[in-house]
Image (cartoon, rainbow, N blue to C red):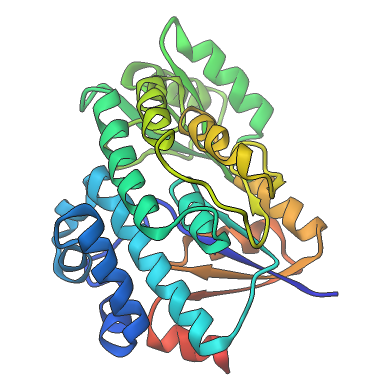
Length: 308
């Protein structure tokens, strides 16, 4: 039997104008943005619809903005198409969108939590001392070995296992630079520093994880209507008691996206629908699970294509 997964984008998919057309066209989308504005006490909607790319790039803004657009898009998909997901998952921040979709988190709790999460992640490491780099065409075991060699008492480790041949590393500027040089010396010349404001998903994020745990302690987790596949272990979770520990662990742990998508395909998922801004995850899925179909929804045109 065919199964469908809704997947939700993470940081890096933001752009000025995202969600605007849906909010102008569908009341259900507009209500999501109104709820987001009320929940965090400033006009997040205006930031999404007309904010500068510089403002949108600030982690404390990026995270609630992408979440709001993703959930506004989801509500339109639910209302206009009647499509239901058998499983949901999200890339890093996107896991919060998946948890809202499943009913585990209320939207207003999620938006407040990710606003705090973004602030904590930015505060964890002084600007300019940490970075991330995409390493292409290197096997994971070899890259892990290169990171161990490059560390020299500092932090550098895989942060995102995105797809075959694309792994992102994170850590202190010096250690990431050394890892790139070691990789190049071994013949792997495809490496590029990413324009990020902090080194996500590595041990340097421990202060952020501790602060996030304190915020999550005050949040109610509800029963889930479908399993959420977690970033930390790439396994479906339906146990609401595990949601908070998984979200805390995720801050310092690598995102196992390649394994997560492969596991969904093995569970019978043959249709992936990316819900929210951009098409980054659709591109990754095509490289991981070639036999599946992918589509994305972020505006009226892509919604019409989904319904056709």
